[in-house]
Amino acid sequence: MDLQLKDRIVVVTGASKGIGWACAEAFAHEGAKVVLVSRSQANLDAALARWPKGAPMPLAIAADLTRAEEAERMAGKAEESVGPIAILVNSAGAARRYAPADLDAAAWHDAMDAKFFSYIHAIDAVLKRMLGRGRGAIVNIIGMGGKVASPVHLPGGAANAALMLATVGLAAAFGPKGIRINAINPGATLTGRVQEGLKAESKMTGLSEAELLERNQARIPLGRLGTPEEVAQVALFLASDQASYVTGAIVPMDGGSGSVI
Image (cartoon, rainbow, N blue to C red; front, side):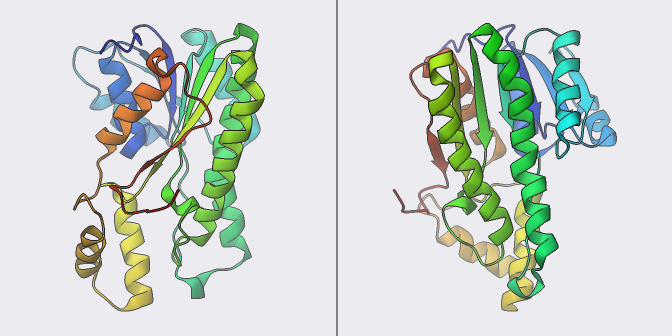
């Protein structure tokens, strides 16, 4: 299937590792012009060093998207350096996991800054530019923690739930203007985040991380965790014209473990 993404300008936040990196790499393989965004210049340098051979080198922008002015600077630099942004993939920001006994007010505020506002600031900066062109696609990589309350992921889950509502609401508001906005809800995926979650759960339950991982995988109908590359393939579709009549969708990618509507 030709996704017709060649030469489209794609901004991927959180692009230096994990799902963000997988998305950036996948878009590059489709011929898109990719802009990598990460808070850490060191992580961006490491990403550039392992960029796929033969693919055009991406623009890399270090920006702390928890700050609105940094998101605005990022979007401006991307358009000045590469051209009009056609696609935004939000994968930046990860809320820490906590055992319930370790929760305090700062944990809730930090989660909203790290996950919710890092997405909203990027959307705000890019969306207004897309509106002037009457065309654009945004894909938010959110997470099943916003639908299923986990005791070790309550602040992050609350941020995810807020992002789901924002995704659907913005899609309805700006669909008439030619902007499609969708989201993907990965379940447990093979990234460093899994290990962080296992550590928090181990502290709460007293079980070993290995035992918890085995139990978690046994609960997944497909029998395994997902991969960042699998999430990236769905992001490609949602961002492409092949999904031209899809907007306001929240796509679960949890191997069937979340039996919810």
